[in-house]
Image 1 (cartoon, rainbow over the protein chains, first blue to last red):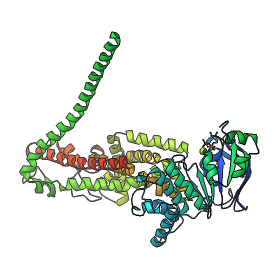
Image 2 (cartoon, rainbow over the protein chains, first blue to last red):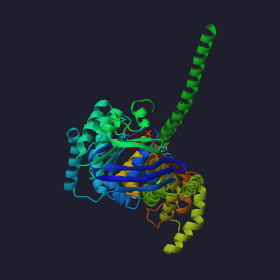
Image 3 (tube, chains in turn blue, cyan):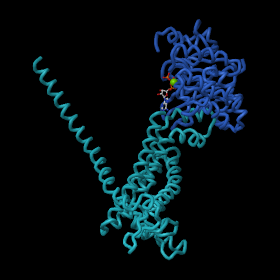
Image 4 (cartoon, chains in turn cyan, blue):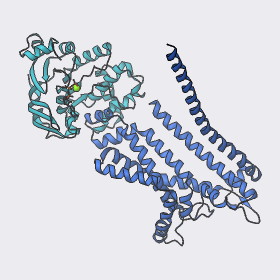
Amino acid sequence: MKPIITAKDLCLWYGSAQALDHITLDIPENSITALIGPSGCGKSTFLKTLNRMNDLVEGVKITGTVTYAGKDVFATDVNQLRKEVGMVFQKPNPFPMSIYDNVAYGPRTHGITAKKDLDQIVEQALRDAAIWDEVKDRLKKNALGLSGGQQQRLCIARALAVAPKVLLMDEPTSALDPISTSRIEELVTQLKDRYTIIMVTHNMQQAVRVSDYTAFFLLGELVEFGATESLFSQPVDRRTEDYITGRFG
Amino acid sequence: MEMKKNTRSWQKHMEQVVYGIFLLLGLITIGCVLLITVYLVISGIPAIRQIGLVEFLFGDTWKPTAAEPSYGILPFILTSVYGTAGAIVLGVPIGFFTAVYLAKMAPRKIKLVVEQAVSMLAGIPSVVYGLVGMMVLVPGIRELFDLSDGACLLAAIVVLAVMILPSIIKMSVTALEAVPKEYEDASLALGATPEETWFRVSVPAAKSGIAAAVVLGVGRAIGEAMAVMMVSGNVANMPGLFESVRFLTTAVASEMGYASGLQRQALFSVALVLFVFIMLINAALNYFLKGDRKS
Ligand SMILES: Nc1ncnc2c1ncn2[C@@H]1O[C@H](COP(=O)(O)OP(=O)(O)OP(=O)(O)O)[C@@H](O)[C@H]1O
Ligand SMILES: [Mg+2]
């Protein structure tokens, strides 16, 4: 498998507190990688390092390297990086504007202004996010009027509209009901043909259901990484086994 | 058991008393508003009746003491409207960009210093604004534009613009800081720059708060009397930027002391007109704030 993102000896400190400890990890292209581990182990931190959202936090120090498509992410233009490495947040966070404007926001930011092009991008993104049929008659309505599950799919559409290669998802279903959750899981599985998806989840079943690879984090360290099937059936590390069998966490 | 019951009923009693006190206080406030309204209407109507509404509102000459007196307050109305509009045109952009800078860009130390300064600006009494305007601004305008007298509408506009800055800045900063960080994160994560994020996400999300700030500024500007009286020349001309002018507020303030008869009554009518303006502004404010709550 060809890696699209590679982390090497990645360490990160928030002030003096170390949150990531020598993470070395290859993320395979066009697949779903799940990041699991107990609360506070650094999953979100790792994810946010990949699109440099950690840049915004004061007092962050990073050592080691992260490459995306062979380029050092810390040396590339951050806006271009974030265009190619999109992100979906834990809490659905549509902008307080119309559904259409939400999805068109990214393309507009990156210089697309022709209405015809925008219309087409918006429709395609909403279709890809499996929400088109539900919103096609209310594109001009405020996005905050959607249900939580719809809002999250809208956020996925918004991320897809800038044509990213990678989609980072931080517990994208933890704020949703079971039906919305399974819709998103289904959607994510469909998207992996065209995108590389890295998804943080606290739900083991979800990791098993949707992911191809799983990375287990503990106290800022990467304990184990491998194909999801083998990691869950034959974990190599004792700590992984304890975690997935629910003996701690 | 008996004891408990007693304390209970006593507590209940106290609650009712406290409730009554608060109700009374609330009623006093409402009573004041009603009293002022009723008083203004009652005392403002007779002169309008006598002069004629159209003649009063649209007459362009105010000469209450002439042999043939004339009671047109259009000069005051237009001066108040132009003066306020000018202050908004000048003050809002400055206030808005200052607010964006403070809320989003400024390093913590600078933000602290500027916010302190803004608070102090808000606390300066309007007579001091007038005084400084009189000593610095009026001569400055006279020199700059080569006028015989620098006391004019322009001077009043500048003073009003400075006076409304603090509330515009403070309210806008509050509105901008209340924008959930999640919105901004979402924008940044799409590859937008921080500047794009502020102006295309944060500002629109804060727009009802910012609009309310502007409306509040309008209210403050239109109601200001002392400072503008000191720098505007206080002559009942039709407004022009370099003309000595008189506002609705200053008309009342400057003539009430000696006016009698119809002139005195007409001043009450001027106050009534001012009151109507303020009411409209309040309605607009409520409208914007309600919009905020809905979204
Ligand atoms: N902005 C921050 N400033 C300081 N410390 C932080 C910050 N964000 C996270 N941390 C700390 O870094 C460590 C890792 O946090 P992180 O959010 O990555 O954990 P996580 O694995 O995503 O946890 P969860 O499952 O609860 O979301 C924690 O100890 C946390 O307290
Ligand atoms: Mg997290």
